[in-house]
Length: 299
Image 1: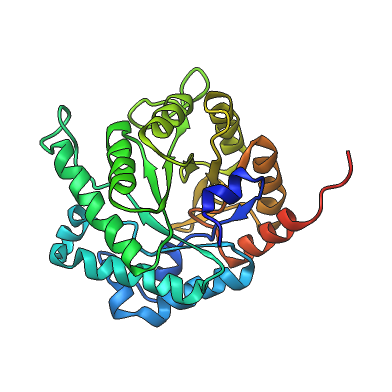
Image 2: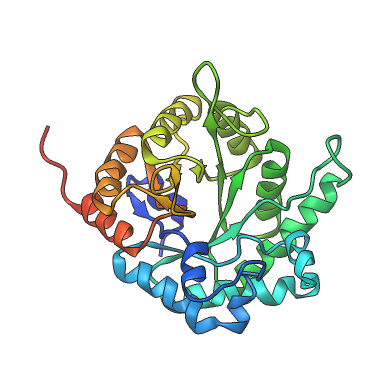
């Protein structure tokens, strides 16, 4: 199997799977419980999620490892089990993916603040991401996504950790929000163009955006990144629209047909690695797979 970035550079459009956290909750994950520990305590449930997305048509299986750094696992008293949990996360995904699909490890924010904004050193953050990335690779991941980031320093530290300590493809993804006066920026004030250039310079093979926004706004972000970092493959994993509170529950209003149609707009904007974040289900991914694999009409 070719490397993920090689396939994207060659012009393929690949589909990543959808939401993990809400799926785990539907299977019984309780508030305050560690989602990543389910890779050890409920492996069949985790595999059933991967299998549902694969059967829906995803090309890339993403691991249940978003909060798998020692910083996050410390909250559950699990910091000594970083390697065990992340190896299991990747092994479960690989078992479902087989040899012909990519397995994408997930590296989420640590929740710690690096100097000069906080007390953590860059070396400590790099070491934590390196520990997680090595375990994911050992379990069978061939790529990793540094995702839902808002601080450039932390994101670039994670990218360097993965590049310097593994042979995996490294994807870097920020979360943006609309900015007063127009345009988009992360919570820390970083624009899509600034992020794309910095992440690529740090060594990311693929850059993009996930979470926070629906597909319409994300298409605008993809276009800005394409202009700022030409030649770098782009990721887009939007939510199924913006969240709304209905009868005390958070709902996402984009239907599978909506996401299918808008996934084509994301591809036209320049994204070649497309998936879903919060609110997306196997039904959304199935509709997106059908849309993205339907031959384009002659222009």
